[in-house]
Image: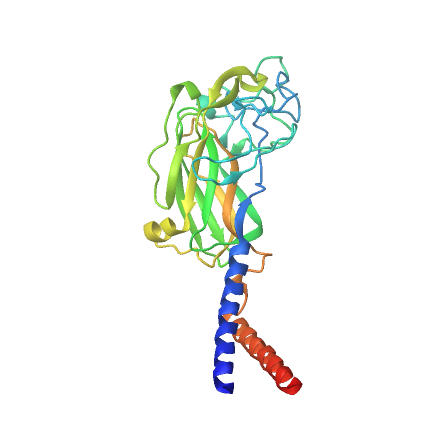
Length: 316
């Protein structure tokens, strides 16, 4: 009777430990909209229109921009109907609000290069927040760092001016390894109804968000104009492994770099990135000796069971 009791108690304790460890892992995994290293004030918020030479104001990455004013049809933070990833955007006026890859002084054949002095036209002077118009590469530290799993996803919302094109996304990890994927997008002009190319290696989906979004025109004047497209791409751990032989499971993501725009006439705007993984501060299973914890909990369960049995024996 005693031997059978302890065997049963041991089995129950192990099962309870496995359930608990599994619940810790599942509770830790979540979606993390990133606070990007925004380098351009390129979306039009209320009060930013009509002042192209404002020293710290809005500037287009080319000749158009998304309008962020909360009205019907305006771009906004959302749960993507394509991927079910949750994205956040910058809703504050007078702030850097996107990650730009390109050079405003050379985009569209140089036709929108910043004015040297204030002259009252629709092209502004180089703003105070832009020390160098050449933004061919943009690093985005991930803080806190995010632990990737075998099912992790990274979603990116972006659009591209003047004909569209490709750009690279480099994922860098705490162990010094990195993986590069290439994303594609059409010209952002909504009436063209351009579509992105087929997803490349490591990319599960690459498609426009449904519909179009309220846009501005006339370069830095930001007058009401045609709607713009926004494209979403989703990079996944299983495809990084199967397409590129790169296993992110258990790696800690520390930086995302956008670079290598293929179209020198275009500006590339990244508005939001969301990572599905485990926050480095969360009680993630890989950070714990799982077998040690399991054995400890099993022994604790056995000890408790033995104590309760002795209590019943002594009472009788």
